Length: 179
Image 1: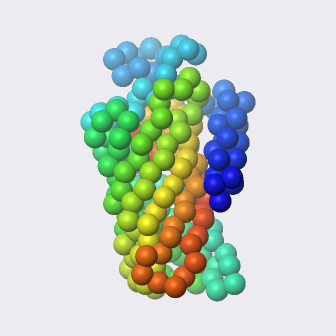
Image 2: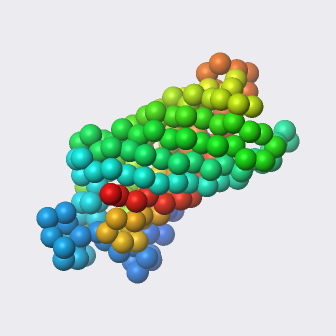
């Protein structure tokens, strides 16, 4: 799993570097002028910033065929640390989902057109998934399209805490908007 996750993050970062037209760097918060190519791409993510967003995925195994929709809201407690709450809904063969309070840490000191992050939380299950509460760990990158809009690529690992179910790994793709 570790090898897959590190390879996945590396591929996403290289993809972001190879498509600079899609990864428009956000301007610095104190200026409305575009950032130069040598500027820090994560400068719009700063203390006090509010983020809203969503992610989608599809999960299929022998027992179920489930779509996943996630809505996120977060508050940047510091320039690098975000407190967030996610609501994940299961769609298809199962209903219910997870409410996950947690934190994300952003690595903004790299001069690349993506902002990598890692995070975690505790996924509180409800509905058909009520016996699947889990530790949620994730890593991803945000690729800025405009000053405040980014594509969000995330690999999530969930380890159930109160059931005999196996852990799961889910690749999610979505967006983030910074207010």
